[in-house]
Length: 420
Ligand code: AMP
Ligand code: GLY
Image (cartoon, rainbow, N blue to C red; front, side, top):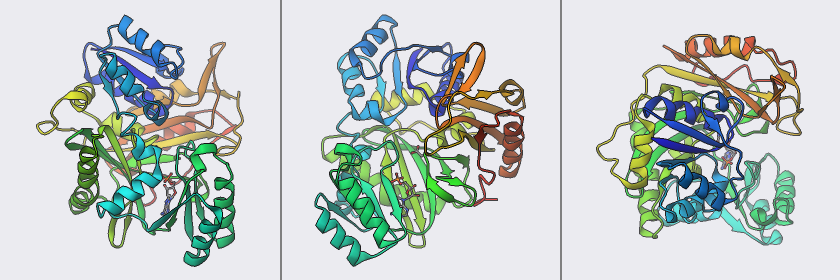
């Protein structure tokens, strides 16, 4: 099997590990990849935005499957263009990517199909947004409709903060992505990241994890892309699973099919488990980062085969086998993140950490220079460990993180606290 992965983060490093493990013999390319990925696959420096160049490469290399990691190429229609060129691509079409590309679309879909989610309003007019905020009061959540690199959500504690956020967004803070905004009720509960493989008709649960969005211990400070994950979360059980499938995932897949934009790929539901049951926070049309780094080391099924069945096959008779043990991922970020991260600092001790049993170091924002590994982004490394229990996975992951010598980096010390 000849496979291309698109992306350069820790998620793609973990996908590379899983695809490498399960489809034998595999030739694996990653566009553009990173220095960690380069240890297990061939990195190719092509501009992902140049679909023609990606297609030409895939044809030349006789690629059997393209796996797209991040949302931007999906929303830009890379799957459509690859498919038109006769290349199997895992991920939704541009049309179906609207599940991540427009928060307003998803809210309206939920309303139409009685899918539980936060009460909301959609606005393009600032005066109307302000009146809605004053009427509903704080806490309240302001969201840019379109993609804003994970930054377009403000959980406002006060009316003033909410009004400021709405004002900034509607006046172009995120360009076209925030010309329209969603303002919604603040939901109380515990968050859950739920992943389903989809083939346009049916879905197959891939796995569940819990992320830690805030930058600081005890869930303090600003939101980030995610500072650490683990699986399985204590809050997850068969009754909850049944409700998520019946009330949220099932109606969504059916609605997308009925609208003529069948959903293929992985559907990532960001859920709030409230006292009234699971509610949808948002959809993503890709695997989570860093959820994937906790899930892939546990995967025992053939990922490439599962993905090919999402592209053009049956999922009903398939199973996703995950190792029954627990896994935890700690994100190491550069000082300054989620603001301006410090770049170019040297990271040592990676090999020592990776040599520990059941431990994986996934690179995200790193670069290699003169034989050294340097920090080159906000979230820089992921340290994942597997254990018989979550407590054991945690102990191993923190032991590995402590071996990484990088004074200019930091990480949360309390990953997994909700389940431990
Ligand atoms: P999103 O980008 O939509 O996942 O939002 C980022 C984070 O903001 C989520 O992971 C939640 O922690 C928080 N959030 C978003 N919407 C709500 C809501 N309606 N109620 C409470 N928290 C929310
Ligand atoms: N970890 C959350 C995300 O991938 O959006």
